[in-house]
Image (tube, rainbow, N blue to C red; front, side, top):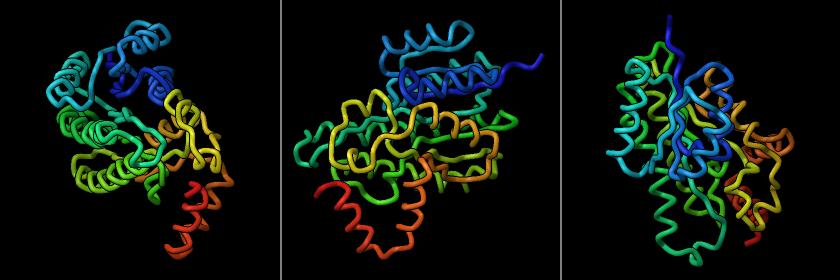
Length: 257
């Protein structure tokens, strides 16, 4: 009897991560659910039930990340079929009003966490017959977003990293992509207030994102998977055709600066 396919999800306790874990479990995957918050992880366990893997994980700690990946893979005959680098943090405020430590934490989690996860998961992904690496990106990687400077910049990094590794790991048979949602109604966004949020609105749910992520795993064609409603998607497509000066002016207006 073949073992269940496996997916390892970081930041799995709430929001997009939790919906992703539930989505894969529904489709017969064994889920490796990890999160820095042990209490929230136990709440997810109550939803998913037994038969899955739950472990507290700070994605910025390379040795811990490697150890947890090893433990999960060992329970799946040394294989991880899908890694979802979802863990991330964000805030919205003027750059200089936020403590430097908070800016650096964004870089640590959103950049370093993705880097570490990909690096240590590679040996287990290579053993899969249909491996995928999926990084959580954002539409804020298309043009720098005022009041989200550090977060937006971190997602530019994720986008570039994904593009590079998508090419590099093709030789291993590993499909690499990122998911690029607009603002999503998640616990993280409940604390986000600013003109940019009011201007664009929050029209997506975590389930919208997890459904796109699932399509990506099945389709395996695109490098970037945008998640948005049709109207802003159309406006963004038109905006890409405009000169940078016009795009800058539009972003300045939307963000209220």
